[in-house]
Image 1 (tube, protein in one colour):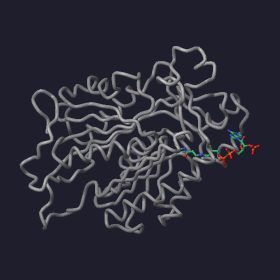
Image 2 (cartoon, protein in one colour; image 1 turned 60 degrees about the vertical axis):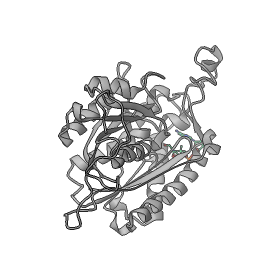
Image 3 (cartoon, rainbow, N blue to C red; image 1 turned 90 degrees about the horizontal axis):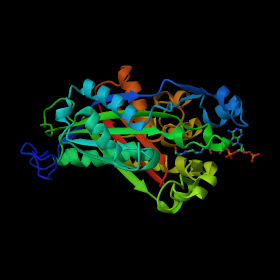
Image 4 (tube, rainbow, N blue to C red; image 1 turned 30 degrees about the vertical axis):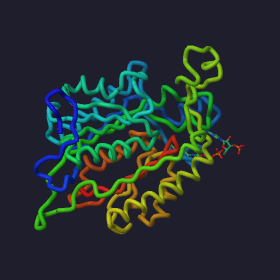
Length: 354
Ligand code: UT7
């Protein structure tokens, strides 16, 4: 619950005798840059081909921030849209959580810059880094705050400007990434009574995992305190760029996405046939297809937009969720399963009933 001085207490709210409020997604929003980078454009930059990129990744184009654009601009735009849909004012928000690996700057937290831009005075604001799993991590953390009553209304945003850290001399990674942001507003409600309609709506189950022994598979080794930007050799060795051992990452991604999807379905007491939409992290069409097959969700229930945006890391799931939601393709009562995988290594999933 928000205090007058702007901090948070962990006190429970009066309407929740057992301390567990249900947590619903009350609004969604997205924002992507206008500039489009096609596979044909990339053919002119590195030794690649449209055919290779489509066959290996499914990506046709991606959105790229201009020199004047940066992460918090997309975050604010997506957040405003989610707030409008949810019908909440900036003054209602008591937690702003941004998942990103491409903040505006190392500090202050991008969440604080977004808080100020939105006018969410008095909210608690912080960033979270869990690579491409960032949005699921954000959902998990915010869920704890809201379900316990420590916060009532939370903004969870996945926002990235990955192309600023993309090495356009490395064809194995530069074809993959894109920029943008997606946001959700979470609201806490008193637990439903036994006779209430749609009594199970809200976040049913979330799981998040990490394995630092695989950190080397996907990293941006320069720009931090280990390889600081004030050493010329950092830039000479091209360390402040995304590096990935794609093939190894691919295999771990398929396995962990399938495992954690099963874990949250079980935690929610649901079966694969109950899932209306599986929204996997949009890294690669082949990973998405393989995960759908492994967990037995038919292809027409697996949402894919990687062909238009590429891999937008923490932004990919909330962008996809907002597309489905605004297109009216999520009905009340639908079960949506979101699953992500990324740097850390990290992986996680959430089962949400709308
Ligand atoms: O979002 C966080 C998690 N990230 C992921 O989940 C990404 C996981 N990995 C992948 O999506 C795939 O591994 C990639 C799309 C990155 C690569 O696909 P792959 O099927 O694993 O290809 P590969 O790395 O095994 O490379 C196969 C060949 C190599 O040539 P040789 O050694 O067989 O002659 C590469 O040099 O493809 C070559 N290659 C390319 N060729 C044309 C690599 N990149 C390109 C390219 N264009 N852009």
